Image 1: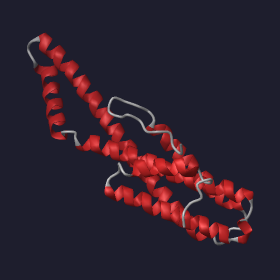
Image 2 (image 1 turned 120 degrees about the vertical axis):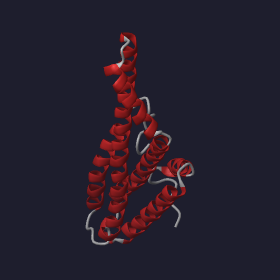
Image 3 (image 1 turned 90 degrees about the vertical axis):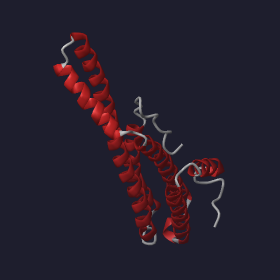
Length: 200
């Protein structure tokens, strides 16, 4: 069943997601495709549930589309961060750090010790940024898993719902977590270009 271009964010948002998905690794693009399928399934079930009829249902179903867009944005951020982290030579970083630590303490020439301290400061700052990037990656990955799990849960719950607000309430709770992760991912640093605004 094809989505109605006039609802749930429209064809432009769907086209944007499709374009971004093509830039993802195959396994991540497959996750997006499964989420799109689950979204369509939930919408079909919701429309078949007579308790969920009306204009309010349209508004709540639009949140499904927003969550899929958020998933794609976060997945793109994760892919970019993972590429950066894989390119880091961790062994070289550790070796350089130890060398400059020793020189900062033991070098006989004062100028040499000063330069070693400056180099060490830069290396430690870089390591701190990389550690922060890894933390962002882990938190964002966890949020992706939560979006997937929530969609699977909704596939069961929507059959028993008696009012559209029940659907919206579950998605609003999910949105709070997504927005928190979005704010975190938009904090830019030298090794992090941020991520697009979620759901837009």
